[in-house]
Every structure is written in C-alpha cells, then in structure tokens.
Length: 371
Ligand SMILES: C[S@@+](CC[C@H](N)C(=O)[O-])C[C@H]1O[C@@H](n2cnc3c(N)ncnc32)[C@H](O)[C@@H]1O
Image (cartoon, rainbow, N blue to C red):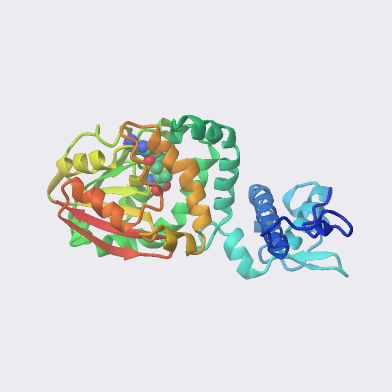
C-alpha cells in the first residue's frame, strides 16, 4: 500500500477547481494532513520500540544492523528491519545505506530511550494509542453528551500518565515547587499532614515522603486499581509507614486538618472543582495551603491554539479530562487548558482569597491557594 498526496497527472487535479478554492492551498493542506497521519502511525511504532526495548538497545550502541538489533533485543529480524525503515523515514533513527546500519543519535535517545530524562516522551505515545482505543466510546459520548470516567479509559492511560508526569514530578516537585510555597518546606521538614486528591498511582506523595520523613501523607482517588498500584509502590519504595492511599472522592475523604492539600493534574478533571475546592478548604488546618499543578496554558483560545504542542493537550483534554468531568455530578468540564484566569475564578468561588502562581515549567504551572 502506498499513499501519496501529490496530484496524479491527468487525474482529478487537472479538473477545474471549484469556485473560490485555491488548489495550491488544497495540495499544501493535503500534504500537512498526510504528515499528521504519518505522525499518528508513528506513535504506534514508538510504542512498539518502547515496549520491546529497541530504543534502549539502540541508545549508545552506535551504528547497528537490523540483525544485531534483533539479536540484542530477542526480536524477529524481519519485523525489526521494517520498523527501522519506518523510523528512518520519520527521521527518528539515522541510516547508513551502504552498510545497512542504523543509529539513534544521543539527542534522540534522550527523548525516546530514557524515561528519567526531563524531555522523555515515549510515554506520550502510550497515551495517544490509549486514546485511539477509545474512539468508539468518544463518538458515542459526543452524541449523548455523557461522560466517560477515568477508570474506563484504556489501562495504558494510567501507566503513561504516571510515566510522563513522573518525569515532571521527579524533576521539579521537591526541588522547585514545594520551596516555592510559602513556608511549606519548613513545615514539611518539621512534620506536616498532607492529602493528595486525585492521586492516581501516587508518585508525588512517594517523592515527598522520601524527602520529608517526618511528615505523613495520604492519597485519595476514586480509581481502585490506581490506589492498589500506589499502595504497592509505596511499599516497594520503603515509605509505607508514612504514606497511605485510599479509595475516596474529592469531597468525601476525612477532613483531618491538613497542612497541605495537593491536586496534581487532577483539579480540572473533577466534575465539581468548585465543590472540591470548598471541601478542601474545610479540610485544611489553620494556615493550610492548597496546591494545584495544572498544565501551563494561556487564558484565551487564540493564544492556546497558537502555542506549540497544544494540539496534543487539547486532544488529551477531549478524550480524558472533559470526559471524566462530564461523568460526574455538576460536570463543569474545565478542560485541561482552562488557564490560570479560569482556575482563579473557580478558586475564588470556593472561598480562596489568596491565589498566587508560584512556579512554572515549560509544561506546568503551580498555583498556591489560601482561604
Ligand atoms: C490525570 S489523572 C492524575 C493522576 C495523578 N495525580 C498524577 O498526576 O499522575 C486524574 C486523577 O483524578 C482522579 N479523579 C477523577 N475524578 C475524581 C474525583 N471526583 N475524586 C477523586 N479523584 C478523582 C482519577 O481517577 C485520576 O486518577
């Protein structure tokens, strides 16, 4: 099968263009769409490379043949050869046609072969293929307006969220975001009580428990399998004595007077973020703080759509975030790209008089909210 966006000689492109349609522009756009399709197919190929350890084996190996790569990864050479050709066509690996070898430049390895790297992105490909597996459900949801709970997404979604956001949390949470909150580093070092709402698989609390052994942490989430994974990971990390995870929803967890309540990329997913923020306010200790970690986004649609990478963010928001919010009471559906101004409105409505943006990275913004 071959696909070519160029007009066929003597074919449809030679027929007169419909009035007002610029055929050069049609050709340009068809080329752009072909690139989008190739990128979509490549996300699936990236998942294959990630799962089989092909990128990891290529990283630092220097030029190698398909047989050598297959041998190093225990895979079938004929598949590996075709996969390498696709990766070369997309500019991911470089090929040396004479020797028939392929290599992964170190700069590309940082993005696709190393999960710990701040620019690692293989996990995003997992997220995208998870979205592909839910298109039928989303089509139905568009027709009915009903939501799709987070827990009904493809399981690869939970893994990819943990892996991708994990890089951001490892790189920023302890060193940058906590010290940016007024007095919080000292409070945690002395011994504080922290709740994380919509905790997923629990990595942020595990990182905090490792950094602040005198504090106590509890994560709440409505998704049982994520809570099970989080509990197992806390035990594996040796911090289960000070971190626990429980199934509960954002306005049902015990209001124990928390010094800090966190929402890591979960606030905009909630059906009723105003209610959740009000509940958090009632669950805080005196002088307690709420921290929201949200995607960095602009306040206007025009600015958001013009910014790089937002096509992916809006897709994730459509498939994963808006859907979850619409599956819950109120269904405010802020969307992942709500922007600071809208988040401040929600927090203001929930009774928070002091809201500051305390930190940001190329991907996230961090808001500190106090009553
Ligand atoms: C995008 S994930 C973020 C998970 C985690 N905080 C992280 O950063 O990796 C959003 C999480 O919010 C949880 N969630 C959604 N609605 C919730 C609700 N009403 N109460 C508690 N958790 C909720 C989902 O189950 C999911 O685990």
